[in-house]
Image (tube, rainbow, N blue to C red; front, side, top):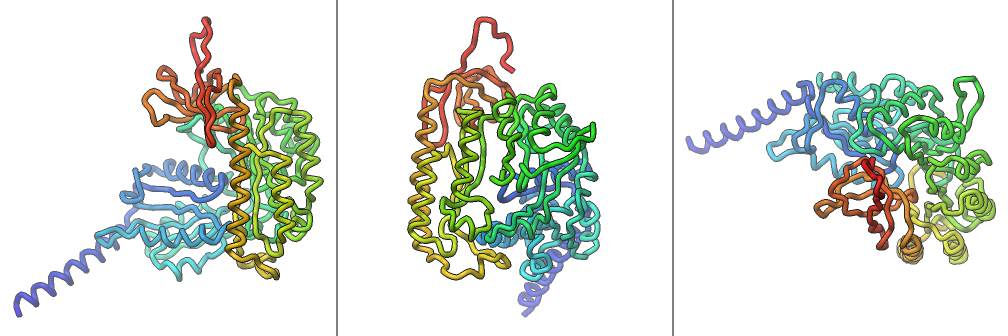
Length: 473
């Protein structure tokens, strides 16, 4: 009996110790953090800004979620599985001793589900939408006091005014958000509800942030927005400018070698932006312009506000001013009511355009969107078969594009270490990865190369050095 009582007492003591440990962790100021971002480049940018904000608060980045005091899951809500994955990740944050970090759910799932997250996942301490993450420091203080903190407000632009100045970047390429939100209301999409209305950041703020990135070692900037080419603002002289004007101003900044932008909407491809592809040398020959379907009937049901024909006309204009441009797109198969003929139209537009790369998905019904209530939803097996056929064609064209690069001389921006000793991986102007053996070079160097091998997803290149080369930066 004594042994049994002792064992029971020990179990109670262990439970109490775990509870006390939880309480101490819950009320201590976080010293280390870990940010995990899901989904689009906008989330990657937001994750980087959250990290910079935490560092500005005196925290240090943990090697992994397992030894972080606070973990931020920066979420995506575009697809159902992406949202469900968040709840799975929350469950895995509990540690073997019963403790857990301070858990923050940020981003679009937080915006869409708000207090529902607390009901489904009681261990979550903070829920913050993509327009409110600048308030994380005060929300952490609230969570320390045992109160779940929730903020899904959408104040215009305020977070960018409060976030710290951009710091030195670990990579030579960086994202710069210029525009957020969407007014297009495609019938399948939750972005207008999770990111809000279209808002353009001010000209001066973008020029200042770009300068800070360049001062921190960045050589390539990718301008980001849900509809990035919907950006507009007034320059320092009070003149109204579109994205092409901003690109031309960035082109004049010393030290910036490359400019890209994503994601674009066909309706916002102005003549000025198209012409910039022919005029601005630092604007890379790559355009990501989603079409979603090759069927005008389905595009109308999607409320895309463009037709198959108008989309192809835009690409023809872009290719006229920049013949070597690489084109990328997005596709949804199995949208409600999509017939075999509609899908064949999608395959046909792919054959016409011959994308260098593309992203393709099965339609995912999102609650609250008009498409979710449409009739004639496509069965899973039909969607899977169509996606397989589409991806096979897209992969074939991507491989063909890479093979067409064989023997071509171009410039690489070296971005990361390769798998082999002395190997570096860089991006070509067409956003394809190229591996190069360059043991004497460094990440951030820009070098001339010749493409020597082409694979389905990447290339191999050899450096071209001249007798006068003393530096390859």
